[in-house]
Image (cartoon, rainbow over all chains, first blue to last red; front, top):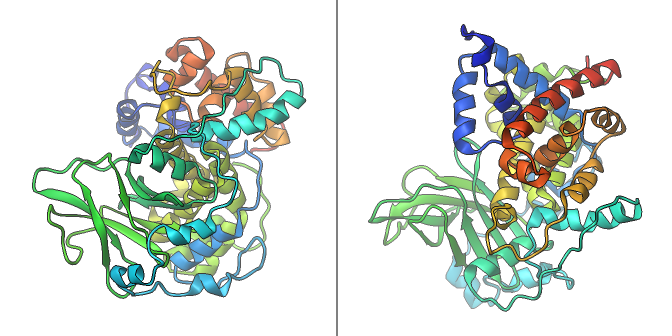
Amino acid sequence: MSHVGPVSDHPLDDLAAYAVDALEPAERHAVDDHLAQCAACSAELASHREALGALATVEAPPSEVWQDIAAAIGAPGLPDPHTGRRAPAARDEPVSSRPLDQASEDGDDGVAPVTSLAGAARVRARRPSALRWVAAAAVFVAVAGVAGLVGFALGSSSDDANIGSLAQQAADDPNGIRATLADGEGQPVARVVADDDGAFVLLDALEDLPEGQAYQLWSVGGPEPVSLGMLGRDGTNTVAFRLPPTIRELAITVAPTSGDSAPSGEFQASGSVLR
Amino acid sequence: MVRHEHDGPGDEALVAAVSGRDHEALSEIYRRYGGAVWSVARHVCGRAEPAKGVCQAVFTELWSHPDRFDPAEGALRAWLVARAHARAVHIARSQAPQRRPDGDARTEQTPPSAEVEIAVHAQALTDDGRRAIDQLVPGEREALLLAYFGGHTTSETARLLGTLEDTVKNHLRSGLLNLRRTLEVEGVMT
């Protein structure tokens, strides 16, 4: 475990950047390799993380976070440790096993139910998401007298109908539906976002597949997996799809281009839908 | 280690109980550290919805893979917060590729100045954290707030601050070491 080289061999500056997740992937992998054989740097990383972990204020998470955790670990009735409240009964309902075509015939398929969840005050700015909050909070900063304010140009209403911009709008919708799909290592590799314009899968970090194969999206929360559609073979792609209102658990598999009738092979990514 | 007083079993015992599929043990860990995880995720993501997903993923990961937490590599709170931060940064970057200051013409809005962004991120700090951050030398404070709470890479941080990437990395290291010393002196960490 111990590293035997001189101190100058330790990537100490990169290690600090690693601790705050600020390295590019190639640099991060180099630090990973070093950490695997250097106890001294592992100890310094732990020290950095201890200090960082003490910085942020502590706020109770929204109750739905625990509800989803409790459901995911198979204990949906376990009360929220921050409030003592149990999940509403509606959140414990099993996912419907209705096939998608039946849901469509009932008129409650895809985007319509999403509309009822969407608030009236949808902001259609295509502002970078993290910076939107920064801009809002800047009002406070301005009042506090911080110098150097610049103007924040609100994004104009978008009439750009391409899938990418619609997906971005759905991602920015504070009342939209969300799912983060993680790989077997727990790393987020895809997202599902939905608003009243539709539902979209955003593949963020999957591998491109060879000819003849494609990613396939599944609902896996019910008694039988149900295919929600093919996603192509591009590992960083955005695809529109229908998200029936009862869907709670999603997974992505690799399938032949024509699609599988049932999932084959391991899940490339999976996650829960948060409504 | 950060000072925290908790009644009942220690963190390592709770993680061991999670390995034995003890729901109550995970509930207790969430009671202790859910707030810290949530706050970091919320601030770095910038919005509540993805932060909820981050928070959920961190605790379900601990449930599914408790062996990934190694007490020899630091305290449970720091490990959970670090996992949340990594996930939140990934989401923040993937949702906002156009914020990267690479001169890309897709950038449609005027981003906030570094000064404003730094001031906003400082709002995420505890009183102890703010006092410790404010004692850092010029350059360290700015680099830490932009990189950690802003989720910026070192190259982005360097451009925002008008300095060199190596300088940012050096400031991050010296800043983290000085931060720890101050937190120890103030009794926040042992």
